[in-house]
Amino acid sequence: MRTRPFILIAGIGMLLAVMPLLAHHSFSAEYDQSKVVTLTGKMIDFEWVNPHSWVHLEVTNPDGTKTI
Image (tube, rainbow, N blue to C red; front, side):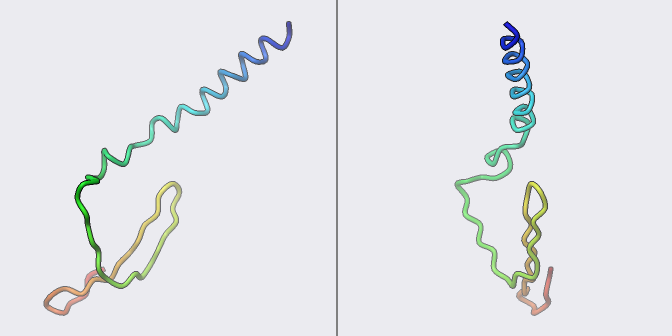
């Protein structure tokens, strides 16, 4: 009979561990999957920042100036 409370507590603990995953934003809430975006430029930096990543581009404008 001691295993039943242990299984119940372990099950509740697993459910609580999954709760933060449900709160993360969805891809479709941030981006429109039907629109294609093309980025052209020189990649100058790439950051792995948990839980996302960032790509930094250097883009040459039509007037010849560069924007980062």
